[in-house]
Length: 200
Image (cartoon, rainbow, N blue to C red):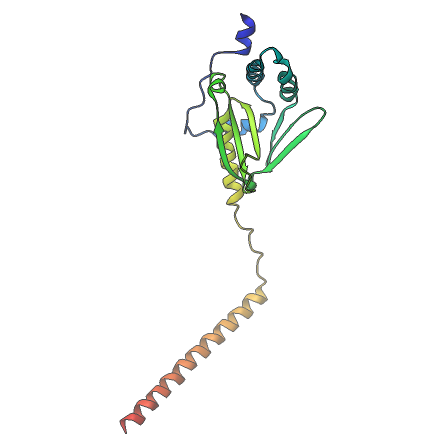
């Protein structure tokens, strides 16, 4: 009985939807490096669907779980897994276009969800799927904050214009204003001359 309790613990209450997270909570995301242990239980339950051959899918899933690593840093998020065939996916926050949370019935029961990240590459599937998370809403909000920071980066401050250039621009602007006023005066004189010619 204790075996099943470790594999199938009671469902944890997910984080409240829409709650504003503090800076300390969002900073906690930077410390997430591994999936939650409930993910191994989810893999074991999924393997049972293979019946007497359950160990065939379970072995690769076991190694996937034990080698899966996440890294959230200032530039982006990285995910890696695998022993013989090591795979690594890396996304900068600026490239992320969409974030989706998905959770089937069993995952909800285990208190887990997947965070799927899509880019503008045009691929139908997500570019990265971060699975085995219990802090999925916190991770989603962290990624949204980083996305907005990546897409709305302030423009680099303009270099200070040398004083000589500023003086030169002021001189040119003043000269153009004077030319404009002179042209208006010439136009007014020409129009007055036309009106006088018509009056005669």
